[in-house]
Amino acid sequence: MNIDISTKDIESFQQIILTFYQNNKRELPWRNTKDPYKILISEFMLQQTQVNRVIDYYNKWIKKWPTIEDLSDASFYDVLSNWVGLGYNRRAKYLHESVKKIVHKFNGNVLKAMEFYEELPGIGNYTSKAVRIFAGNENIPTVDTNIRRIFIHEFNLDESTSEKELYMIAQRCLPEGQSRMWHNALMDYGSLVLTAQSTGIKPKTTQSTFDGSDRQIRGKILLLLLKKNKTFEELQSTLQIETDRLEKILGKMIKDTIIQHEMNYYFVDK
Image 1 (cartoon, helix red, strand yellow):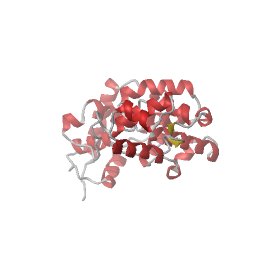
Image 2: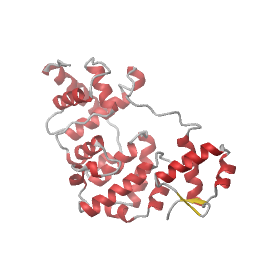
Image 3: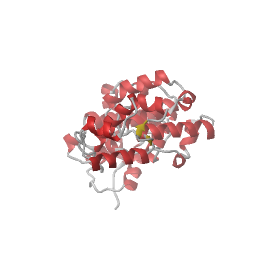
Image 4: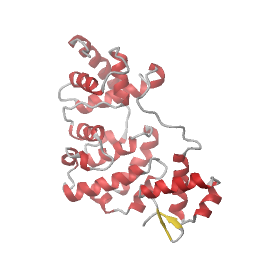
């Protein structure tokens, strides 16, 4: 598929996005730093979680662990205790593992480590580029669900437009030397103006309903076990969940090494 977008259209698009950002940019704590470690924390927290929920967690996290070495030295129990409530708790595990690897293999150099993101748990192509963009202002494009939606809407693209084609457009649109500001501007435009609701453009992946979901139950289990070790019977009595379902949920949490099971008790390893 050959997508024909003129230079004039690109320049007009840039003007729209940058003017909007100048007048409406959001004040977010991770935008007040160029520290790659702090940017990495924000990117992990922002995965599948709304910005407003992340702000307090981010601020408390950075206050508790201001450097990557501080977080690397923390216990998983402590990390998980401070993560609980953000959801998708495997992110906390992956973040902790990745930070340890960055400290020990890359001497704490987050930007260098992002070049080898395949070696780091929970860090994919998007996160690695986002850290390099927001911390290092690198002239590289990235495309998340917001940016994808903006391109599809503004350039009248088909929703089936491939990732490769979107990246080619992103490269053409990127103003030289303004990568950090440009991507922040796109994020805000997609979050405040061209939302999924206003455009009708659906994301490629969607989250399941939270209420009554296994995700919700995992969160409840974690809260209980962070306070006190529990038997299966105690968890079932508190949560009122059928045996088969609870067994599967607990089994997955053990497989993900979020919790442990010994001597008839479930617990979070300290």
